[in-house]
Every structure is written in structure tokens, then in C-alpha cells.
Image (cartoon, rainbow, N blue to C red; front, side, top):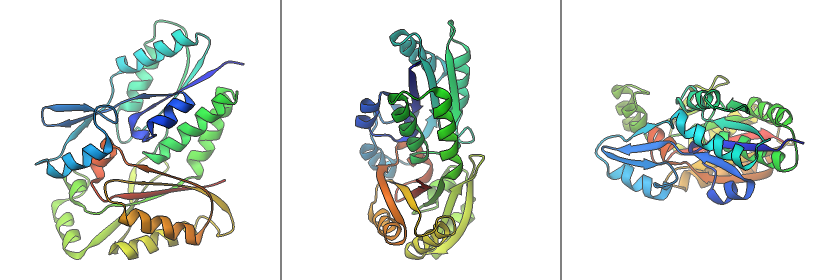
Amino acid sequence: MTQVRIVTDSTSDIPQEIRERLGIEMVPLQVLFGSESFLDSVTLKSEQFYDKLIAFNGLPTTSQPSPAEFITVYERLLDETPEASILSIHLSSQFSGTYQSAMLGSTMLEREADISVFDSRTASCGIGMLVVKAAEMAQSGSSKEEILREIERMRSETELYFLVETLEYLQKGGRIGKASALIGSILNIKPILSIDSSGVIVPVDKVRGTKKAILRIIELLKGKFPADVPVSVHFAWTSQRGSALELYEAVNANFNVASTSTTTLGPVIGTHVGPGTVAVFMQKI
């Protein structure tokens, strides 16, 4: 059976030890603080990033990998396992050109290769759980087609809600107007956001105060998942774990949680949502 090699990018926020254990290749995006350039999760880790973000006078920018960077990875994998198929799973094409770079890289190889590039239509843990599942299936001997069917199912059945601590970073990044950010800060408005089926960030609700926002997220999840149905839950946060712990406890108190994982949102995603963000990803098992 043809071996399947799995490639992703740094916005999947998969810890290095898991990537190494499952043989997942990661292509990093870049984060730029003025003239300083860093490789996401390689030369700039999450714990360093949030300190720099708070101290930086402005908003860092991010940059996708080039097609040449993907070609380098694809060529190396094919040198190691010439008969392998490659499945490359990436950040929503609505957020970044990373998916397009991977696609272009796959078409520019100077050899025949079986490469599929998959648009996760999500971010962070949403990508990570697809990638980890794909890598586990690949290690178990599943074909690329079997893996694709499974991660397509997972993508369609996963619910995501996230809560930002401040609207400042969304405003700086051009996601909302300055007046909305100012009013939100004064009134302690907490927007609840999600990512729709096409991979676009969408507003779900606006609630005053973090505690009420968490209760609202639980209410929204209850509308999708009956209390007796086993679910897999993934939590992600930035620099502050207080709200994340509250959300974690609320989810575990209200749902039949069969498995759970936690991770820190990496520098690229953190650039756009800011410190204090917390997210929950839930799917049926």
C-alpha cells in the first residue's frame, strides 16, 4: 500500500513533539515586527510572541510561505519515500495565501507526484485535529482517499466558537471599525465569533462580560450537541488562561466529553485576535 506523508503549516498549532511522533511536516509562516522577521513557531514561540505583541507599538504583520518553500518540503519527502502520496492540509484560503502557495508548489514539481492540497477552511486547533487524524490514519496504513473522506467529514461536523478579550487587534487588522472597538471596550462587549463553512470569520453574538459570553457559547453548543452524545473537544487560548479555564470547566460540566486537548494559539493567529482570546472546537465522536 502506498505510504501517505502529511504536510501542514504553522497555523495548525500542533506541538512539536506531536509532529515528530506522527511524522508531520510543518511549513512555517512568517511574523514581522517592523524590520524583524521570525518564523512562526520556529524562531518565535508563543510564549515569546505575546510579550512582544503587548510591548510592540503597532501591529505585527504576517506572511505566507512561498511556493518554493513547499516545493522544498515536497521534494525532500519524495526523496525519502519516492512512491509516497502527499496530503498537504492548510489554513483557510480565506485568511491567507498559504493554501494557494501549496497548490502552486505542488504543480511546479519537476517530477510526477501524487499530491493533494486540502483547504481546512478553519484555523489553529481546527486544522490541527484534521492533521493529527490524517497522520494517525496514515501511520495505520489508510489510503489518501480514505484519509480525505474522513477529514472532509470532520471539517463539516466541527463547531467552533471563539471569544476575544479586546476588539483592539481586530480593529488594527481592519476587521472592525475604530468606533466599534471603542464602544466595545467602554461597554465591555465580548463578541462571539465563528468560522463558517466557507472558511470566513463571522460574528455570532455580542454579550456584555466574559462570564455571560461563556454561558452563551455553552448555549450555542447545546443547540448542536445533545448532552448524552460523546464529543471530542479541543481548546485553544493565547496568553491568559483564566477565561480558557472557565470555558473548559463549563464545557466539561455540560457535555459528554470523551476526549479533550489544549493548545496555545500561535503567533500568526495571535497577531489577528490578540491576547486573551479563547476558542473551543467540538465534534461528535
